[in-house]
Image 1 (cartoon, rainbow, N blue to C red):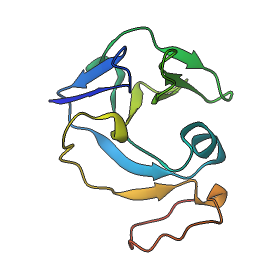
Image 2 (spheres, rainbow, N blue to C red):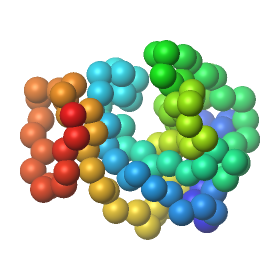
Image 3 (tube, rainbow, N blue to C red):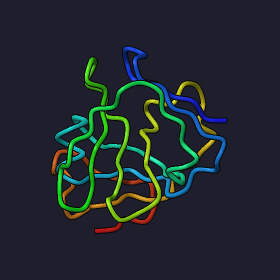
Image 4 (spheres, rainbow, N blue to C red):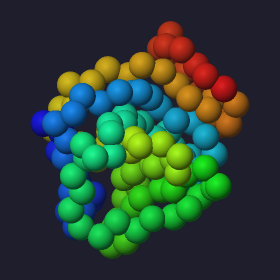
Length: 123
């Protein structure tokens, strides 16, 4: 079971599904919303239990982003046409037991850091 929460604890989430797509996103939206790289994994939307009132923001025609309206923690990313939901690995309470698989949206990567971990990098 993976459990997580926002900074203030108003929103919690949990899943007993095995997360997939463990990645670090370097897109400009994730960088602006998180202040850096956003690490996440996804599960089927029906397998993620969320408590609390998430504030959803339609950041593009393709997806929406979920955050806590109280503390501002950026917790979720949901594509409009998919049945999965991504959650922030940084919001997980305790060890995740997961291993990073790849870096995504490298075409938007900030110029102030380098990546030298040898993992796949997708534009």
